[in-house]
Image 1 (cartoon, rainbow, N blue to C red):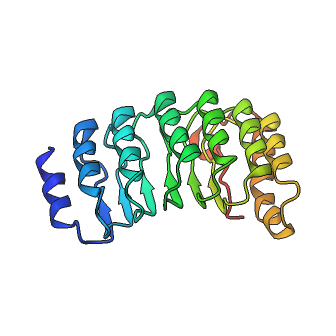
Image 2: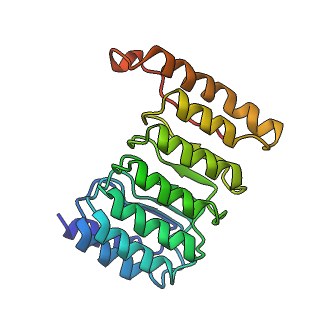
Image 3: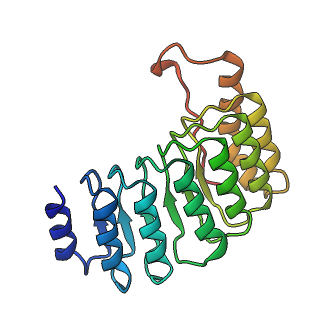
Amino acid sequence: MGVVPVSYFIRNMEESYVNLNHHGLGPRGTKAIAIALVSNPAVTKLELEDNCIMEEGVLSLVEMLQENYYLQEMNISNNHLGLEGARIISDFFERNSSSIWSLELSGNDFKEDSAALLCQALSTNYRIKKLDLSHNQFSDVGGEHLGQMLAINVGLTSLDLSWNNFHTRGAVALCNGLRGKSSDSTAAWSTWISAAMTSAMKGPPKSAKDWNPMKASEF
């Protein structure tokens, strides 16, 4: 399975968009891609969703980003990153500058400790404009971390927190984080916050069709 995506990548190294989703790259395949991208000025958007890259693969990617200032959008959703992956990503964005402005981290088993790490990085890094943290395992404590980050961060324009486990406390913390934002920003969030509060008060859904996911609007 490793030959097909690598050969595809070699053929498309001069394209601005490379999609390697669902190719089973694993950490070793990801490292090979990362090495090839170190000095590549063409690729600006990279999709690596569902490749089981784990923390070793993330480490290869952030090492590449220390040299590559051309890549702007990266999707590494559904890759079993967990706490250690969140730590690697957070350390990089807290200590280094890069051209990445869109980052998709959906479905990576992030819990409260991961939220704390990511929010610490985003409290000082304002380059990220669009962030997808949907389908993780954040609950109210995570909501509090995110709310505190939102109060400080002036860079984010879009944040997806759908399909997490926030209840009233987490929703209130997120709402408090929006205080001081522009009126247009706050209005864009109002529908989402309302849905979050309603879902929390009703309790868990009986089935998927009854669930109104907490989808963050652009703000």
